[in-house]
Every structure is written in C-alpha cells, then in structure tokens.
Length: 351
Image 1 (cartoon, helix red, strand yellow):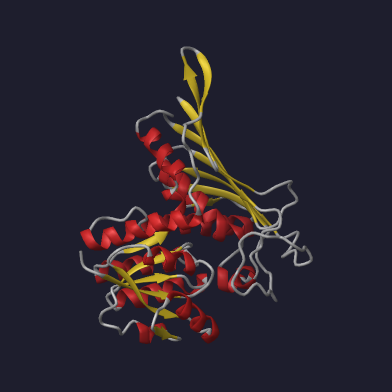
Image 2: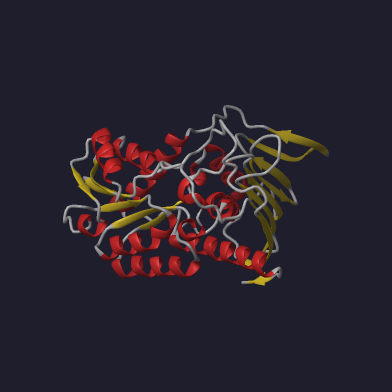
C-alpha cells in the first residue's frame, strides 16, 4: 500500500488521539503539524517527533507530498480549514461537529465533490463494539420497527473550559459538542431517517460553574474561560420521516447525581439500551426477557480513534466509501440548527 502522509491542523486535546492513532498504523506517517500557538506547536512536535511545523495551514497545505489532513481546530475553523485542504487536493477527516451550521457543512461537501477527495466526519461513537453489535441486531430485524428513542449525554459539572463557552467559536454549548454524537448515533442505528420537525428548549441557569473545584472530566488545552454565552442544557423532541421520535437531552451543567451517557431504542419486537454495555429487551416463548451479550468490554478513547483512523486510511487506500459521510454531518447540522431555532423562537420548526 502507498505510504499515506498526514498533516494535523489544530493541536487541542482531541488532536493527541488522532496523532497517536496514525502513528500506530503501518504505512502512515504524520509529517506536519499546524497551530497558531507556537509554544503548543513546539511541544507537540517534540512529543510526536514531527519535523515540519506551521502556524499558517495555508503554507502547510502547499506540501506536495501531503496526502491527508485531520481537522482538530475550534469549531469555527472546521469549514474554512476543511475547504482549504480539499481545494489543495488533500483528503480530510474533520472532527465533529462538522461545522457551525448546515450552510457551512454543505459548502464542505461541495468542495469534497469538486476535489474528488474523501471527506469524513469524526463520529467516533459508531465504532464502539456495543454500537456495532446493536447495529447488527437491528439490521437483522431483531428489534423490529423503531418508533421511539431516548438519548441523553448529561454532565453535572462538565464544562471543558476555554473556547467551548463561546458561541462565536463553538457555535453553541453541550448540544453542538455532545448532542451531535447522540443525534448521529441514533440516526445511524435506525438507517438514517431525516428529521421533519423539531420542538426544543435550552437553558442557561448554571453557567460555567467555575467555582466548583476538582470537576474532572474532559478539559480544553487552555481551560481558562473569560466568556460563557452558551446553553447549560438543551432538550429537544425530534420527529423523523419514518415516524420515529427522539427525545434528546444534553448538558454541561445540571444538578443531577452523576453524569449519564445513554441511548435507548424502542421497537415493536424489542428494545435496547446502549451505554457502557448493551442490553436488549424482548419476548421469548411468551415471556419478557432481558439479553446481555457476554464478553462486552468498552473500548477506550484511544481504541475508538484507532478504529476510526484505520477506517479512514482504508477508504483512502482502497477507494471505499466512508462510514461517516459528509451527508451524515449535514443532516446532523440541520437538526442542530432547527433545535437552536426552536429554542430561540419558542416554536416548532419544520425541516
């Protein structure tokens, strides 16, 4: 196979997972890093033994032997950086959310089509063993017709700090940061229905909770926060063209006992709960039964990214379609746009 040479734009916390995953693969080499923060750039280059460093990705994209780019920047830069990379003839793996809104996401897809290059969106939750297992059950019709879903990603005091609190830089709060995973995963598991209407509310009652010590959890590489103008909590009811309804909840700050991350699906033949493990609920010989697959072991973040990166590289090498397409990212962004609009207007939004 051809040796694939990688550049990484943006060196925030998530970039480490990308770089380590690339370095674990044969015939793949990270040859260039880019960020405007020169101290962070030098530190990352030394840590990962990368010789070529840039503070301007426009200059990095001039490298003729650069095949592909990982976009790990702040959300505001996703579309701009991805389009520049595609126009320069590079394949792109862009972290979620795909962009700040659906309009930007559509422009990214258009650039990928014009360039004839791979554009993959980083929905890593699809690669968990539990999600893969549940998808196989559902594809065989074990749960029947899914007509209702519940999904929550709730943190008690889980604001990452830094740019995540800026609507201008992030596009929103927990909905666009965490809820994006839930919306995509439910759509993926249920064969990608399209949303037709949304009713939503958002709240900003608790703020960044900067007074809380020892919060733990995921942190921005620059956790200092001088602005917080995003939501604490988003709640939405989403109806799809196949008749399914999704009840969505996501928060950075909420007064609950412990953090939660769970997807529940309810069909006419069975139901399922997906969090750190998979459980299936159905009937057997006129009895209600719960099924817990044996041998479940939740993948670490590193393992999830290794699977995702391996899939991306295979798509480049073999010309295969990617699992996480630009069209998927666009549909998710349309839903997020509609949720924020419904919350702002207090009205149902039809897509």
